[in-house]
Image (tube, rainbow, N blue to C red; front, side, top):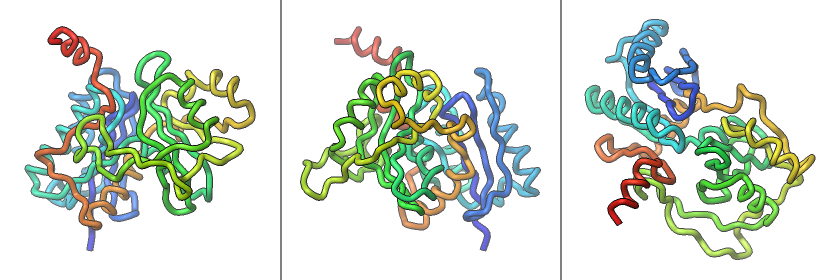
Length: 268
């Protein structure tokens, strides 16, 4: 039985869309958009379906990257995915973008991985993960802050793990409650960290200065999210009974946009 899945990631400057059938990738477009994503996304989806010799009605599932990332890109991608899921009457699953980036390295055994996504100058979105050879384990909360905070977390070597609440269940920017440290809490014990993400290039000098040989920099082609991986993760989530409600699914921002923060300050 085919499970044709449309996967959308619009969280960074390079957007990614893919059609998958289970773990098989039928087609994938990765393209640099220049503030014209709203005009390019649907035509790209239609063209990709044609390349895969499929119709929109053949789709059986949808996967969408929830963020964090570009506020405008997130809104476009999530709204498009929600609309298609509602129109076609098919299940949808949202995946946190930091998780998606870390899954590119899940084939490694026991590696420490830290994706970095651009927030604004001098700040990044980040989380630390341990790879298991077939999956990933998140070791820290999703966070936003200066790259110096990333260094401090790794140097500390011991951090709490957050609860299992999903982004859409916990609201925009909250991911459950932090569990207290105890003897069973995972530790960030590793001699090196594999960094990736679109914020890596700008922050690599600071990371290298602070961590030296402990820094492993992923190549650029592994520093943006892949919709082909997203499609597989979305189907796994749906088959596990963890599909999202398309009406309540929201982007995961971690923090509000600058205009929203200014508006909130004006209302205080």
